[in-house]
Image (cartoon, rainbow, N blue to C red; front, side, top):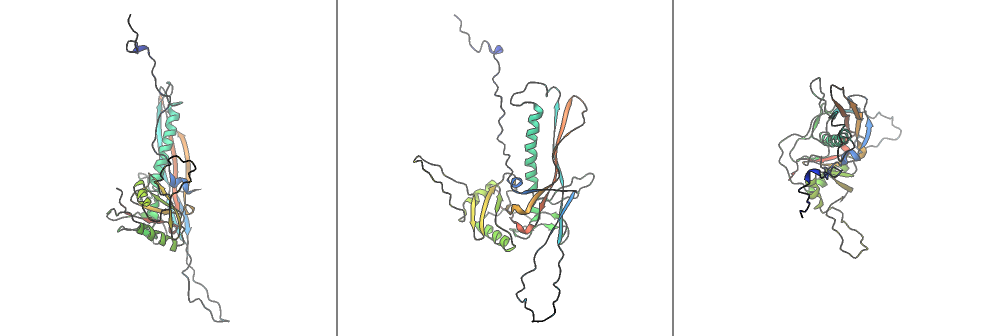
Length: 320
């Protein structure tokens, strides 16, 4: 008697395709998630900065003397250009009609996917060492990324810090420049940056770094000891990550970011940096020209570094 096997009836067996699509691509954007949000009304968004006069140790007046005016120093007026970032999907009528596994519709799946990709693009751009670009009819406007703003509290390691389009006003017209040598990240560099930041009036709050230098951070002596209370006598686990650095000027949360430039470590006070949206995330149906449906996902935004002295940057670090 012949035995019926799957090999002989392979043409009649239904497919066994899981109704889920697996994707572990990272989508965490800690910079955007930690900083504030505001609105922009023009493609060039401006704000003002100011500083107090240096302490006057000889501030003594003769009794009964006439008062004299204190000299006035004008505020600084700085700004950043908005940048447009988008993703476009184009789904044929047939693709939108067939039965698909792992998605309600191809269009809905791609919209969600492209939205996550757009967010990753924005995190990368906001943390990039790019200067602002005014733009014209053939050149896209670009915002100045976070590294291009930091010029006071720095550990340059031989590079040249960014500049503004004028001495005190304007926008960053150059990011970090010079020949990179890729210095190894050290605790001495970190302490220098923290001390400079504190002396400028800033508060030590968050360090943003790529994965390679996050591991370097874990080896520094100032890292807080990781402890876990264990009531169960079974074997426990080991905490190998460094999350808090204890400095002379306060505790610093150490946050890894896959989308930052690994050659920089940034000390950030989230209270003094924001994203300003001229046009928040939106979906724009594009003109239909045939048997397909096109949709543009778009955001127009810029970076507002309310005062660059609230932050610090360690530049030109080894990345491997």
